[in-house]
Length: 297
Ligand code: C2E
Ligand code: MG
Ligand code: MG
Image (cartoon, rainbow, N blue to C red; front, side):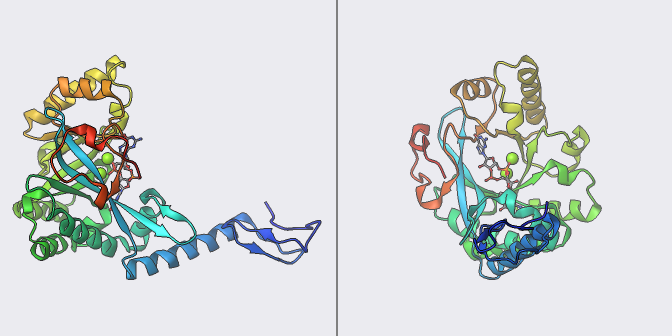
């Protein structure tokens, strides 16, 4: 597409892709690709600045025991408050942060901030932090975790790192050593988004995991879908047989909660209990799961 070519009324402001109004010349050719590249460069500059200034926020989504309904901890989920774009979700900037290497600094900030928050939570709550493949590759992770724990005073067994199964398909020896060293500190290691198609049973055996998080695609059609119900039942049993704690993501209905609780899934997370919320809205005192209902970001 050509933007603004032979514009019938060149005196009118033209709204460009990022919403800015310009009075571009009548015959300026602006193929989509160039506009997109400019937009990408702008986004990257903004992200570099945000990284320098730690201009991100963490929202937290509670994780509940399915047996008791009590909160057992929360997952930290990053958001980027952007002047023009609003509260940008992670899917819109984490891939760019990974490509540019900014994820190392951003990830370090996430771990420090989550540990500093969690130390004020009830002493039996854990905090989970998502980690990108790039963070595992660049050798900074172990030091970042150790420093965050030392600075915050958070007991290591109250921190858990979440790694997605896709990033663990080809685990190098270095990665394995890093994960083992982090596990040796006492920090938990969760396999996130389990069931999205990459994890093998060998991987479950080889990695120093403590938690398996069932992806919400496995939870979505429960309990009505007989195949999914059978798969989830088998996965929970396998997780337990391997000594892992099993957490279900994306629980949105009471029927899903009841099914997962009935088959012995340990904990759950999802909109049924709470959307991710700013830390001050996380219900810190112990309470029934209805405390979290209808809280959203
Ligand atoms: P994730 O770690 O699997 O996090 C769960 C995602 O599912 C979150 O999206 C959460 O808001 C959403 N969710 C929770 N409950 C429900 C539900 O009941 N239904 C539905 N439909 N969705 C639900 P969010 O916050 O947009 O995060 C997306 C992904 O971005 C995360 O997936 C994680 O992989 C990544 N991410 C988030 N924060 C960070 C971070 O600090 N560092 C890195 N490297 N990645 C992050
Ligand atoms: Mg996660
Ligand atoms: Mg997940």
